[in-house]
Amino acid sequence: MINHPPRSGQTNLDENNGPGLFEELLEAAPDAFVIADEQGRIVLVNRLTEDLFGYSRGELLGQNVEILLPARFRDGHVSHRTHFTASPRTRAMGGAADLFARRKNGLEFPVEVSLSPIKTTEGMHIISVIRDISERKRTQTLLAKQAAELARSNKELEEFAYVASHDLQEPLRMVTSYLQLLARRYKGQLDADADEFIAFAVDGAARMKNLIEDLLTYSRVTRHGQNFTDIACNDVLQAVLTDLKFAITDAQAEVKADALPVVTGDRPQLRQLFQNLISNALKFRSGKQPEIRISVLREGDDWLFSVGDNGIGIAPEYFERIFVIFQRLHDSKTHSGTGIGLAVCRRIVERHGGRIWVESQEGHGATFYFTFPVKNTKFFERESDGHD
Image (cartoon, rainbow, N blue to C red; front, side, top):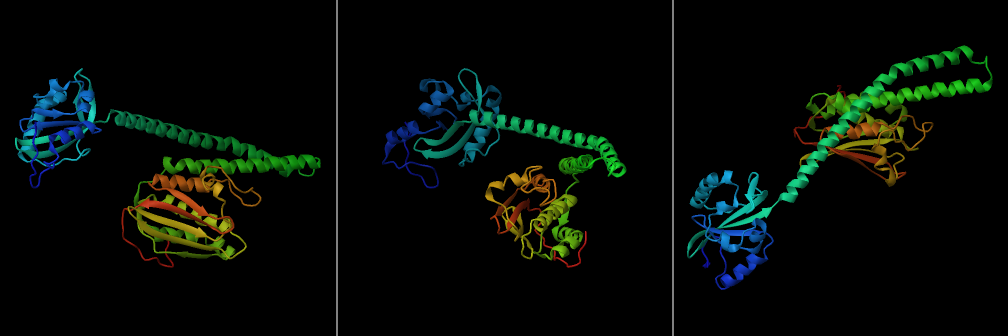
C-alpha cells in the first residue's frame, strides 16, 4: 500500500485522509488511473483501468507499465520513462503527440495521458491518467472526410458554374443579336403584340446576359484569385472612391473613413469588396442625404471593418438571404442588379479567412461588418488624393 506523507513541491495527499480515501477517489475517477514506481512497476490501478484494458487487477499489479503499450513502442518507452523519473514534472493531458495503448486482446486504441510524480515513503511514484479518445478520433476523421468531400463538391460546382456560364455566352450573344435585329427591322411592321413580344424577348436576353456575367464573376473569386500580398487598405479605398466619384456626387453622399490598416490579401478582390459595399449603400439610400462611414478596429487576431449607411435598411429575416447568390429583396424596376454583389463579398471575405454579416433595422440604415486576419499592424495615413 502507498503511504502519502506531505512533501514540499510534490503532488501529495493529506495523510489524515489515509490511503482508504485515496483509493476510493481513484475508483470514482472518470478516467483510468495507473500508479507505478520508479522502476515502472504497476502498484495500483482503478476499476476503469480494468474495464479499458481488459486485464484484471491481479494481472496488472507488479507488471511493467509497458504491458499497456503496443509492442513497437515498448523499448522506446523504457528510455522515455528513465528520462522522466530522472527529472520528474507534471505533464498535462493533450500536449503530447499521438499516443496509443494496447488492450489485453491485442487491439490498439488512441489515448491521451497525463503524468504526475508524487513522493511517498516508499519512493517516487508516477500517477498516469489515461483517457480513451477513440470516439473523438473517429469524429475528427469523419469531419475531415466530410470537409474534403465538401471541398471537392464545391470545386466541382465552381468548375461547372465557370464552364457553363462561359460556354453559354456565345449562343446567348447570337440569340440577343438576332432578337435586336428583329426589333430594329420589324418594329411597327407587325402588330402591337408582336412588338411587345419581341421587346420582352430582348429584355429577357439582356437579363440572362447579366446573370451569366455575374455568375462568371462569382466563380472567378476562388478560381482566378491572385496571390496574396500586403495591401494598404487606404489606397484601395481611395481608388474605389475615385471609381464611384460620379455616383457619389450624383447622390450628394457624404463618405467618411477611418485610417485603415495594411492587410494581406488579393488586391483586386479587396477593391471589389469595398466597391460592392459602398455601391450598395448608394443604391439603397432613403430620402435623406446619404451618409456612409467606413471604420475599423482591432479585435484580437482580426481586423473588424464596417461599412455603415443611413439608407432604407434591411429587415432581420433577410440578414442571411442577402448573401445568397441571385437573391434579391427588391424588384429590378425599383433597384437594378442581379443580386450577386453581397454573395461575391461573402466569397471574397471567406477566401481571406474572415466572415461577413449585417446589422440593420428597417428604415434606419444598415452596417456591414467583415473581418480580416491581422497580418500587419502598420497603419498608413490616408491621403485625400490617393489612387490605386
